[in-house]
Length: 210
Image 1 (tube, one colour):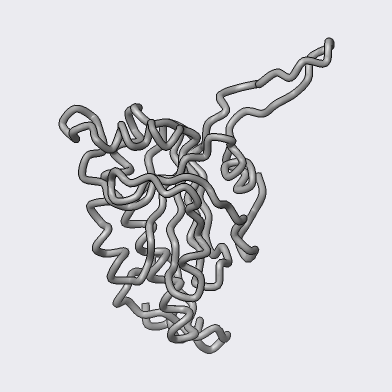
Image 2 (cartoon, rainbow, N blue to C red):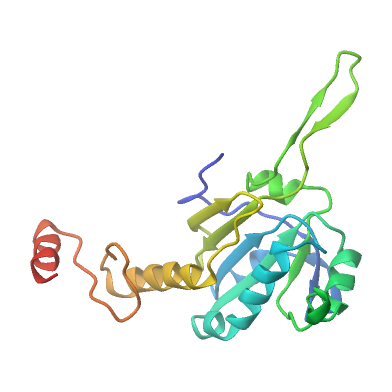
């Protein structure tokens, strides 16, 4: 598993469904450079079980991300047509109706490969035929990308384990606090709590007061 933290987020330009129905053919994260943070998350498949709970959870907190000047973008290895059909299905039937942020179609699996979240891989058999091992879909990867396009946080869960959207917001808050105040954020830090100066004295003062 590659560690992308501290590195430039891999570039992509692929079809995405935005606003719940519109297919944009050349969607990329470059539109956010210099302007917005990005939470980029991967999910395995459309029309599954854990995935819609996460996708709706991000939608429910979209105002919190907007208030922090952060875009939310989802990715799976489905087609854009599959995304659009899933987005048109009512929530009570297990669909994504009401979700407005972009869902990118990683049909060629290049985005998942470049972010190193693709489960399974390709190989050749003894006759030289290309074969696939495992499900060629994305793990539940999540990446916080800053305004300069640098990855500042990454998390990868196995298929059955849903993510905590509030934790994604907490990590975003911590990064914004560090950028704004130059302070580092200790264990279990949340917005509004004390942080500490990145010095020996700063750590000692924080520990003494807690």
